[in-house]
Amino acid sequence: MLIAPSLLSADFGKLREEIEMLNESDADLIHVDVMDGRFVPNISFGFPVMDVLKKYSSKPLDIHLMIVEPEKYALRFAEAGADWISFHLEATVHAHRLLQQIRDAGKKAGIAINPQTGVSQLEPLLNDLDFVNIMSVNPGFGGQNFISSTLKKVAGLEKIRSAQQLGFLIEIDGGVNLQTAGILRDAGADILVAGNSVFRSENPSAEITRLKNV
Ligand code: DX5
Ligand code: ZN
Image (cartoon, rainbow, N blue to C red; front, top):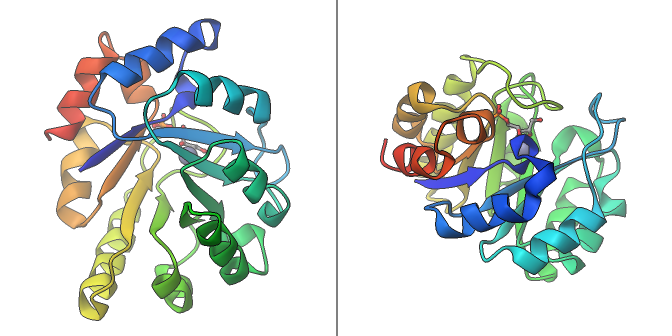
C-alpha cells in the first residue's frame, strides 16, 4: 500500500523540516490539498507553497484540487511540479477532457469524488484515468471522522476494476488512521492519505511506517 501524508496537517512554521522528515520516511507521495474557498468552505495554499515543496521534496507530489473549474489551474500545477493531479468530478463539466490534458502533460491523472457521489458516475472515465480519490470525509478540513459508508464505495469500485481488468489505483482521503487502514486495504484501497493521524502523532515518521505495514 502507498502512503500519502497530507501536508494540510503539517506545521507550516517549520515546513522545510516537515518535508525533510517526509523525505526520510516511508511515505510514497506527499498529498497536497489545494482549496479555493468556493468548492470547499476553506482556503489552503497555492503556487508559492508548491515552489517550496518542489525545491525540498524528494517524493512525488500528489495534488488534490478542491477548486471550482479545475481546468483553469490544473496545468499550471503540472508546470509547478505536480506529479499526480486529481480534481473533483463535481467541480467541472469536462472531466474527460481535463484527464486527457493532465496525461498529455505527462502526469498521473485522477478524479476525486465527494461522499455523496456514487462510483457508478465514474464508469465512463475509468479507462482514461490513473487513480480515483474517494473522499471519506467532506472535503475542506483535516481531522474529521471517517465516513463508514465509504467502505462500500471502495469495494464497489474494486469490483468494477477487477471485472473490467483496469489498472487504476484507489486512493482514500479523510479520517485514515491505524484503525481504518486495515479495513480499507481489505476493501481494495491502494493509496492511503493521512493528515492528522500522521502529523499529530508523537513520531510522524514511525506512524507512516505503521500505516504502511498495517
Ligand atoms: C480534506 C483533505 C484531506 C485531509 C485529510 O479535505 O482532502 O487530504 O488533509 O486529513 P485527515 O487525514 O486528517 O482526515
Ligand atoms: Zn486531500
